[in-house]
Image (cartoon, rainbow, N blue to C red; front, side, top):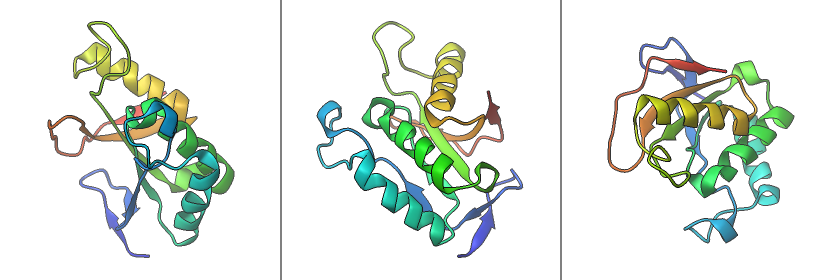
Length: 143
């Protein structure tokens, strides 16, 4: 596997990033083609075996289920300090005026929820969803 530096963060990540939008719960998500946890775990495990250490998910993928699946698999198959998890915020996660968006309140709330679902203390936030693209954040979010 080839590795490269992620922007100016200093972190080395695999040139291939495993996107996790396809992991989740088809019953509670827009996309009915997502794989459940049982079928997702072998893919994550194989990616790790091949040297992939960079994983991309988002709070809205299967309304958080993708993050939960990824977090449990990484806990079982990887050393946490060897992998980099990128997640995104902005999508609607709940009703109410602050249930979505990019306000400070919404970002901090959703990053905290993502950290909990992933079962980790740090993530990087690379962008937001819904057509608003940002350059990679230099901030590592910590629990």
